[in-house]
Length: 637
Image (cartoon, rainbow, N blue to C red; front, side):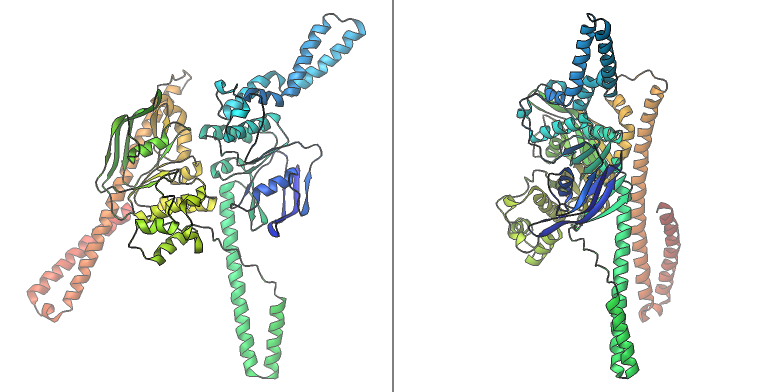
């Protein structure tokens, strides 16, 4: 065991944040600490490092344990360059190498005992140098910097000139190169693009020490964590397994807790009713029995009522009008800013019911594509065609669709004047704005709060084509899950940009990867994208394919696989359309059958033999047709 936290408690201004938090971490174990915003995750990390002191409880670290801690915000003040800053971590190895080289020179002129002493020292230093991977320190530094998203021409940049996000990456690089026994990372993925996050995942998975992570990136947690410590209302619960395992177990435990509490409450009510009834008999025996039951109730160990999950948003997205099958067609789209080309010759086809994610590294032009489609930015070339009856609902990560001078209440009511005050308040309450919060100015809200207002407007728009730019930014995990469920139930069409791989994996039916100034199409979710990425890029970006045995076959297989997936998706769309048509036909025939039954009960009908025969014949035809439709529906469904 490398770390043990025993009954850690901490309060701020009399408000408890952590209450008797206990867990332990073994050597080489990878653990995640999760909880809603404000649950005390960062506070717990600071207590472990000694930056904060606990009110109660103790933190035990194994003797000699080295700890590397990455806080969310880094104020790294250094006059050195990025590369020189990394070299400082490797200073002992560099000095050892310099001493070894110096000894090699000195030994040429030494004799006798002096030479023997030098040889002994040289052997010891060489052994230590090899143990510390000294022969590869330069490639190790370069590999970590490139893995974290720095290009070689940025290595010479002074740290003092870097942005906050870049300084955080430098600090993370220093920690990784230092190779401490325990690494603790607070939101390490906030300033990394997808490639860098994937690199960090693989690095930490193979890291020989222990790792503790606080992050909202559920895909990241899912890949790395083998243990999850949940902080809820100040208390801790420990779950073995990754993030998905934790979610399932947490749901089961919560359901069991609610059921046990409700059963106990029901038993208490039952006993109270029995006691009241026994006392009403007003006899000695019945009163004694009542008193016995009262004592039993007093001794009962009351279960604590499970905390209400009151931070969930309630999102229902449903289009008012069904669009045509062809929702969006883009041809030969290109955009450059000065000499910097973002993308060119981009073609996009989106059909009704698809949920398409655009992914890619920072600065490739993903948001620009959305803005061009939404007519907020002019393309250099290209044609954009919307299908029939397509109505766009746009979610902007910068929230330019909001009016900063308006209150929340006015922002909703001005766009939807037919809504009464109660309806407006109910909508805002569903997005966690209650009481006087509705009269706050949009300009005074945090980024997360503005995001919730934008989602509220999107819900009311009843659009059938949602265009979303980073919709999960600033949302906590619970709110992200609510949004995922809403989009998965949405019957319209969705096009979005996101860096949230878990969100993409749960919601996307197709992925467009903006790389090499063009879009590569993947007909599947994020896991499918990872599986096919290498060979698809070789095909679409005309990269040289290695002559390894089976490589050409793999590329050919991927082409066939892509074509097969496209055909399969078309088949599924057709089946879905056929299913809807069949359901509609069944509904119409059943309605007509009911109308005939009503007619047959009328005297003027059942006394008219000709009319009666016609209706009976129609009813038989309907029964026969319904039988066929029921069978067809079962096959389709």
